[in-house]
Amino acid sequence: MFSLFKKPAAIHKPSPALDRILAVNGRELPLTIRKNTRATRITLRIEPGGRALKMTIPHSLKEHDIQDFLDRHQGWISTRLARQTGGSAIEDGGEITLRGIKHRIVHTGQVRGLTQSIDSEIGHILSVSGLEDHLPRRVADFLKKEARRDLERLAEQHARSVGKPFRSLSLKDTRSRWGSCSWDGKLSFSWRIVMAPPPVIDYLAAHEVAHLREMNHGPAFWSLCKQLCPHMDESKAWLKRHGSALHAIDFG
Image 1 (cartoon, rainbow, N blue to C red):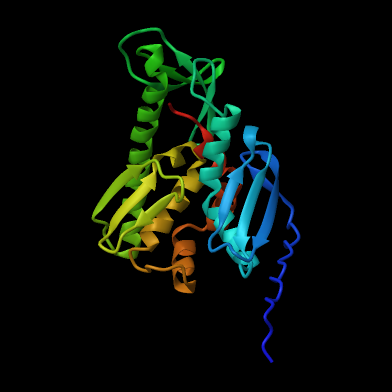
Image 2: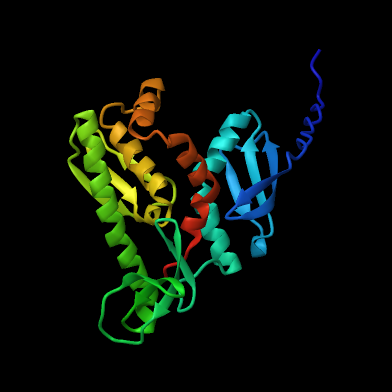
């Protein structure tokens, strides 16, 4: 028998929220995760003022996929939080780290001159000349130069160890990853890594050079990476804890 009346549409009850605390750039923010049967992708929203995060996910998404998404978007989250909450800025009297060492930024007031790291009686100083409006750019340019010097030296050293020369090395300001290695041997790094301690810089160079031989993240890759960089585990942990803070610094 056929009914002339339509059955009432099924009522989809919202899934309970999967609340947790997310550590971002030294802050602990409440994160609400809601499953939605209609969602086909992950969406992440930062509440006004950067007070909290809200995430909507497909109903079938697994926990490891959620964590992978959050790990890959740490830089994105940090950058947007910095914009909303007035994050770290480069200014006279402020601080910046170079190879893990805090430097006080001192604008010399001179139109011409080099940007240089100085170990003075009052501590480490980053002396910056030029117009004050150009201060963030000049600091960034200095960090890029230092990063290239370190990464070229380390990449060449590790490339000799694996017997695989790289084709080129470029610096970028990426947020989603710290480095990459293309199939044809082109290495790319985020210049912000030069603010990290030397073992972390070394780990990043070793990681990408290891891809010259192993273009994957399988056991053989991690074994090779560990051979090149014995402090791999500690450096990975440092990047996970502090890497987002480096991304949050606003160079204008």
